[in-house]
Image (cartoon, rainbow, N blue to C red):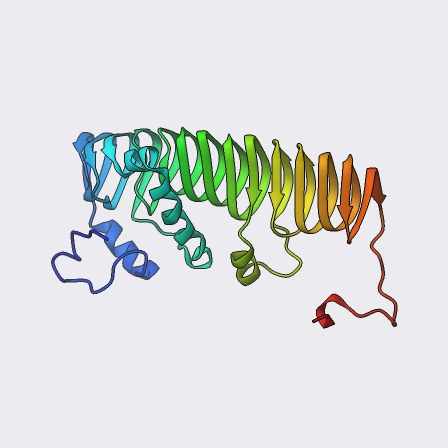
Length: 292
């Protein structure tokens, strides 16, 4: 990671996001106010107005833009052109969701246009261009959106890869790697969670999806509360809700499956399956935790 300011001067032996909140507060006090217009990448600066970054391959450091952020070329451009590069980057972010801090190296309060953020950036407002964003509170529209957390509306012309989301995701492909609370609408497919991450990070009774998935292919790698509508619907854990499609599958059900073929609890039924009560284990039946 590129660093500058106090780190480059050797006055700090740690880099964001490893600093304490007290250290972050001190760093914020070092920001120089830049009114109206400034050229990025920013280092220890607060811009009130317009910030233009012609080439944004270096990360902004201890900076904030209150107004309009413009980025012409940057890491977001690489993400858009080279999606195979972007997906491993996001996968590494998914693996550390429990340690992502609530303080960030760069923040925009307003509008961001162009190639997209670098990592560790938070946007409160509207982003056009997509790219790499640590946390979104608002709207993002781009070719590809890669985020750690999103609260709001995310539209990706190709797709969206988000670790944790509350809101509406629209794209050819939507992938949420941790928790989805809201609606996914996809031209090709929707997916919620990575099984390994959920096994390590989510509580046993916590659901990977609470909401709605609409698309030809829909999948949740953990339990779900809500509805899936598509050709092929799958929930690896318990489904509390409704599946509507040609092929529906879940590990256990409290709700309904409507489709040509419905799989649940090792059984196959055509057209319709309805189950409104959980099956209670008798004393003679082994629990799932005791099975080899």
